[in-house]
Length: 396
Image (cartoon, rainbow, N blue to C red; front, side, top):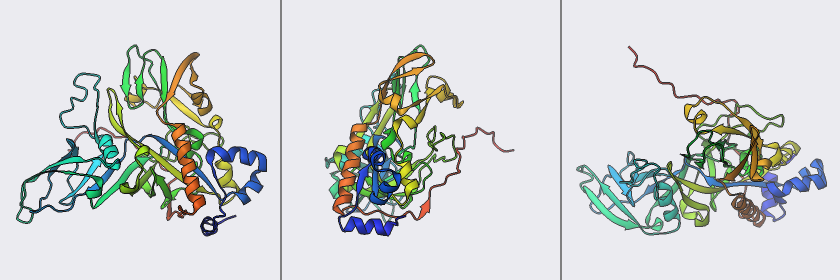
């Protein structure tokens, strides 16, 4: 048994043994679980891929004279102003003003909230345009100016749902191409797409949320952030494999960090033709090896993780819960899967290469003593289920 304090003492002294989730599998095979649990202090996990439920709070400071922004746009992308005078929230999936969206299907969606976030982190100069109805204390009714992230008082990532524990494999059983957040899916099961780092992914290495919880310190595109709550749609009460791995989305994390400390190469605006825009983000989460059970769960392999194959032409949009079959991440990473007797080409929306890079960067920071672990202040719920939105008539 180890404690967070003991592990952090070893990190500070430069003696911590840190391995990535990719490395720990062979290490335990070689050393044995008991011996490895005594030696290893931290296992680093990571993921890189689209995370639609992301965004940021920005504070511009006060102009002279002052303005209370009631409507505002950054590079013509609408931001939410229903908070204090010069605070705004920018969502990753917000479209640019005037974008025809899917009026001429499939839409191109060339620029949106995720791209603004990418440009902010990259230090590019952006335009702010804001309107106001004017008040005695905030008389200015209109402002147009240019700024960079360094001109802002605060730029804080506040992401309601990141790091899905597992996810669907999207496929198309219809006779026409469909355009989804899982990418373009060709007709008649000609391709399939998935989105997860599999055995590197944070919550798949802690399937029962034993060590990842509210207050856990995380690596967000190079910045040190933390879990501030369970993520939206967190649903730990789900069907699991005999090894405890969820066979569907299950857990999620709500994350926050200082955007000014993020690294541009791990923040990318994303376009999904015919669907919209998003943000691809790199996240790393350290797993403290407190005991053998925690270590054993970090030895999960792609072959042990099953993902549900779902028809996005009918079953997904109709929300009927039908799963065609389940396939392992070992099969997915091979590039081909079998769906009802047909071999289907499969691609990934996430990058295992980038995830492994993040896991190694986080491991190096911990070894240098630049990243200490934080003990959770509250656990993530294990028994919560997803509720549907029910259409009801107005009460009489």
